[in-house]
Length: 92
Image 1: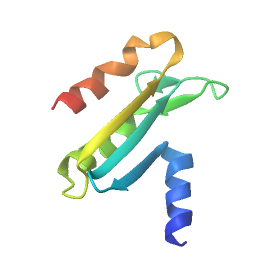
Image 2 (image 1 turned 90 degrees about the horizontal axis):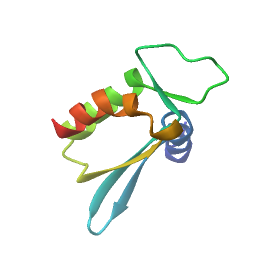
Image 3 (image 1 turned 180 degrees about the vertical axis):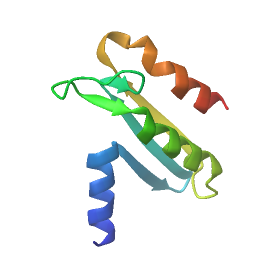
């Protein structure tokens, strides 16, 4: 798998991408639908899983190659549960 295919796969699977510019490297992470973790959502519902997001956030925090994080949160009705673990991880 070449670099372009890896980037496309990461964008489709995890909703994430790294943008490189003269100002630095920005990691963009998209959280769409309900955040699944405490309860399993039906397969017909678009979800983002805690177990995918939390390791990504930990890796971003520890990376010397990433200068910033852009988090795009698009949840159903402002899903308050979506923010708890993710907000704690970002604040940490």
